[in-house]
Length: 450
Image 1 (cartoon, one colour):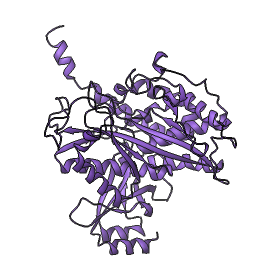
Image 2 (cartoon, helix red, strand yellow; image 1 turned 180 degrees about the horizontal axis):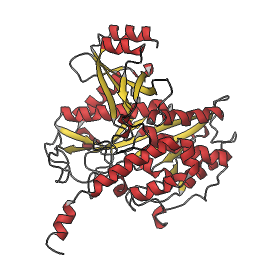
Image 3 (cartoon, rainbow, N blue to C red; image 1 turned 90 degrees about the horizontal axis):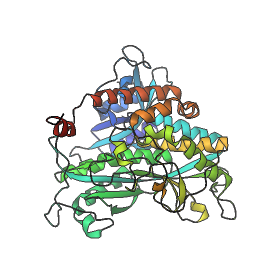
Image 4 (cartoon, rainbow, N blue to C red; image 1 turned 120 degrees about the horizontal axis):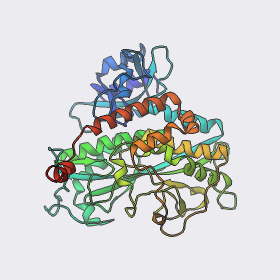
């Protein structure tokens, strides 16, 4: 789509404003809302400008103090919209479009620590090797009653059918899913104009916990879809007086929410899945890919579990992984090989939480697999039975995960050292802010007892 066709598209849809956005380190959409005429005029003059500091904003909304990677005072960058991502925003009264952009400096060099650029660079590495990765995310989330006071625990919402507060485990219950039929209807109605290609919806094990499966496709397109989907789900929930949360562990005693990533790799020339041999067996590259995930999983954890809350999900006997084993159709391991025909042979990375930045989680998972294939990493033998009987070898905290990433040069170099440095500064700043908080647990048990 050219500037002329963008002009035509905006005129055809009667668009008055455009949300030009880019994902920050946490996957939060940052950008500007621009009148449509100014958006179009800015396309030809590098006019869609923002400060490069948008990529050093923490999840609290505060900037990193004295960042080492950006110029003093920051540099201007401009957004180059990806025309393939322009969509009508379906929940506004006034005709509004949204488009995802890539960030460039004024000399037209890309901002190399922008998350969308990082994923693009990983895909370029695959392309140079003659490979094309395919992914399919599965994203879980909770609906919760509105929580105005953050000191209070979250509570399940009232069901729209029964009028009662949802309670108890209701895995795959049709009736439990129907309790939020109107919210789900809004989600589907928002996904269609967004071009979000989702498959099935099911109720998960937690109260008012839902899961959406995305259809498999190009990793960049799927990352875009996940970011847009999160916005749509939050808006759909808001329409009905509840919150939608993608926190990894919003309830103390309930399962966490994940973003499992199914992934396979095609040969660009033949279109064949390189994970299967011509006889349908597991290929050498498939085993190398698993070996790479095992070798680099711990170092990639800051991208799969990017927040302090993320590690509350990764505990034994919780349908969440705790080590780096793999197995055939085994949901207790982090690396599951689903039963499938050879053409659909794939690996499911079950480590990422729903709170991850989809661009970085997909990039990191593909990076681990790429290193495995190029370094010819060999996996351990597949696990049979429960993997929780093995040691907890994944990092237990964000601090530990960041430390492992810092000392793993192959992964840092592949993702981009400059990007990793910026990412780590953002996460270290968040940790410093978190350490200042006095929790309700401390007030309850230490106030009068110590």
